Image (tube, rainbow over all chains, first blue to last red; front, side, top):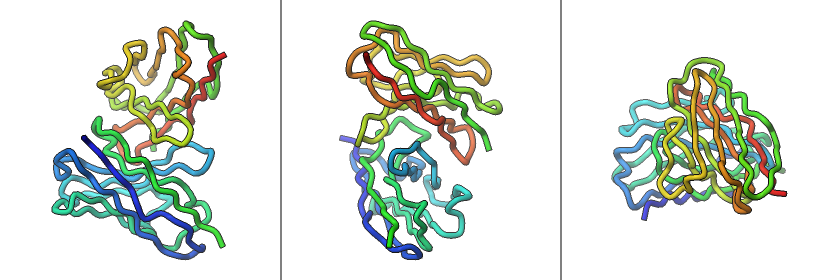
Length: 115
Length: 107
């Protein structure tokens, strides 16, 4: 069964850091480009970041550029999002997804930035 | 950045009705257009990819079409389980962008 399982969310103070993980199983992870997409409570979907299969090509949304870092470990079938200098507006459910393909999305992990 | 303008923002229909949701891209995106269904508390579920290809396991009452930069999601015969929010999304170029969403209510 194809699965993407996010973890690492939680409550963090403004200015803090958090690292999200996405564990992949049931498919050849190294052959799929990956993304992070987020959804603030009660709002729409926002693309956050993209990483190519090898990790050599990376893109970010302007809203997170310079604060977030996407990476992947193909040997561990895992995707990561390191988040620094977190703001209240980063509060959202974060999904990992291979938007360019038909893989199902993960169930998401909630990040809450609040004092 | 490519803007995706989705309409309407909400609509309602009765079981058996035919409904249409549209999405207009601000520039050409070829056929790099996906449609998702999202129910409360759940991740988005892919319905249509490449503008008109039905994702495996999705009922055939869902269909997608394109005309230039205009894209349409059609549900041919509404069912109670179709109550959800629907999003379009372009994967032609980053930043990938989503429509604002359409909340569909079943009367």
